[in-house]
Image (cartoon, rainbow, N blue to C red; front, side, top):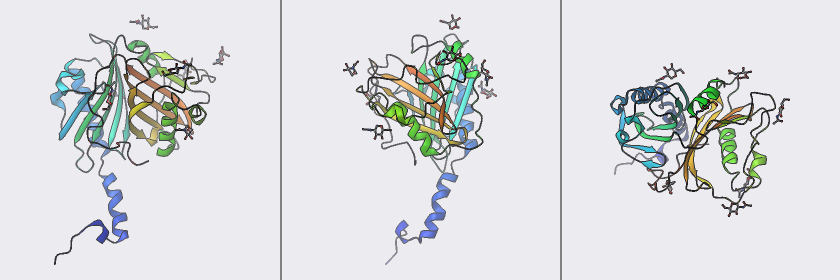
Length: 288
Ligand SMILES: *[C@@H]1O[C@H](CO)[C@@H](O)[C@H](O)[C@H]1NC(C)=O
Ligand SMILES: *[C@@H]1O[C@H](CO)[C@@H](O)[C@H](O)[C@H]1NC(C)=O
Ligand SMILES: *[C@@H]1O[C@H](CO)[C@@H](O)[C@H](O)[C@H]1NC(C)=O
Ligand SMILES: *[C@@H]1O[C@H](CO)[C@@H](O)[C@H](O)[C@H]1NC(C)=O
Ligand SMILES: *[C@@H]1O[C@H](CO)[C@@H](O)[C@H](O)[C@H]1NC(C)=O
Ligand SMILES: *[C@@H]1O[C@H](CO)[C@@H](O)[C@H](O)[C@H]1NC(C)=O
Ligand SMILES: CC(=O)N[C@H]1CO[C@H](CO)[C@@H](O)[C@@H]1O
């Protein structure tokens, strides 16, 4: 009788050696190469520059699954600013970019997800905003984004601290005690579309205009990208408390355990986009 080799037959020490290897095979350079190809593709209006695409690849824009060639990449963008964070646990990246000088102005937040081990791309998931969206003004957004430092921290933030802060922030619409759990102390600057809460002063606060009605709809379908080294966490979700529902991107930066920057990109009028998410089922939050 043959013995089946299942994990329960492996000694614990072997398992301990195998598990970290799974994450180690998520290769930073491969993730960044895809970001580069995506940005080049947007600059040239060509999806064909994307390599290493998985068989089960999907392109999601503003919460709707659409063929990539019918989406934003069909435009030619002059990119003024791009900024990427890297999640080596979930094998994913988040890139924010501003294109203020194209035929139409754009501010875009994109999460790109890769299969571990072979690093093929299975999901490009974007919030794409333009004129008419929440506080939209690309040149103003550009001005503020360029003024901030998102450089690596001396001491990385823990994954759990980042996820807890992001969730507490996004829970403020439904939970009266969530605000107290967000490390919102000064200085903190929120760039909401192009609206800036501060003036670059040490007393800037992100408490400005936070929700006071805690019985609204939750911000659901949260998808996370976490980069401990720069203290950043990206969350894409649906703002169901807006009418109609809106596709939303929040990017948070913590310094010393406290919220320093918040960027939001909110696509108005994405009503009727009903494609199932997440397409692969289950949570894509990754291990805390
Ligand atoms: C993205 O930003 C980097 C600097 O952070 C720059 O070197 C690169 O050229 C930019 N890419 C595009 C397509 O604009
Ligand atoms: C964007 O903001 C800038 C600076 O406040 C302003 O000069 C410009 O007119 C605005 N653009 C649009 C399209 O509203
Ligand atoms: C509300 O937020 C607080 C602080 O984060 C948390 O402890 C509590 O569990 C939350 N309540 C619900 C119902 O999620
Ligand atoms: C921050 O300080 C400036 C200058 O002292 C003041 O004008 C401003 O009102 C203060 N802002 C807040 C949010 O307290
Ligand atoms: C709070 O939001 C809920 C859901 O949208 C709404 O029914 C309620 O009237 C709001 N309460 C206040 C005080 O605005
Ligand atoms: C976004 O996708 C979720 C998950 O499938 C769906 O429940 C929701 O209705 C969609 N939201 C919008 C605004 O289309
Ligand atoms: C990183 C950066 O450029 N920060 C600047 C943003 O603007 C304030 C106020 O003008 C400056 O003090 C910062 O140095």
